[in-house]
Length: 392
Figure (tube, rainbow, N blue to C red):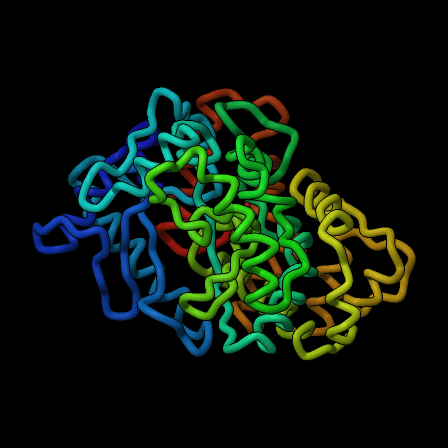
């Protein structure tokens, strides 16, 4: 997100950043050497992404950090800078949100008409998306089954939004708490956040996309909204580009830490796809209604959330009746060398000192004043700029 350098309030000038990067032409996307920058729904958010698929995470943190520095240099004379985390900690979106007004923005307008996009779940959120590839139904099924089992565990290592409108919310991942309520007018858009058991394109169309298309028709009479784009589960099948997109990672304290968390997620997904601990048929059977409470507990309590099912724990290679998510991720770290997928020293910070939300709350205390919040989040902005972990 883009904030003012002096007081860290949101600063809706992403169009000016993209214009400056595009040689004074305003484009919705500007390509770099390895990456691309693009607009988002609101004017205080800019998206950094890889320019097409990559074979590995090697070098990715450095590429994204170079982007952060380049954007900060564009913002400096405008009185702005970048800030990470999953939500702005004191933004009041009903008063401060400004939607992207340029170019082909009909989809944004249709979405705003249907749901009203000036709330936290639309206008005040940032996250890391990880797209993992598949080709054909056989690969999609294995990948989707694995991701469904990893999804509920991710907030334990990825939460980074404990404060909303200046108040500690009681949930370590407040972004996911509001995310699931965004489109309550049409519950099928989000479902249980953990997606349904769908292991072919036909099953996915029948059980998810066609249901969404039917349910949004009354709110979108002109048919602008594509159900694949509207789908807001925590992992979304993108059949047009052959990937499943994981969307439940807050992170963003720095490029290094974001890539480390993404790498850890990829490492566990890979182990499940390879059937390291459980067969593909065993992975397929878990209903979202069973996995969703684990996801909710992880979003609220992080690593202290507990799994109390021997059969599910066996799918993760744990032989026990109960296991906290903190212990589970430590187990993955021992079994899989998760640092090898990103940065070992960075993921070690999460294992030893907690997710970003837990570290933020250690710095703010139980009832932070506005001045202390600005001090803590100023340090977080500096961590993003210097590509280092936040260590209170």
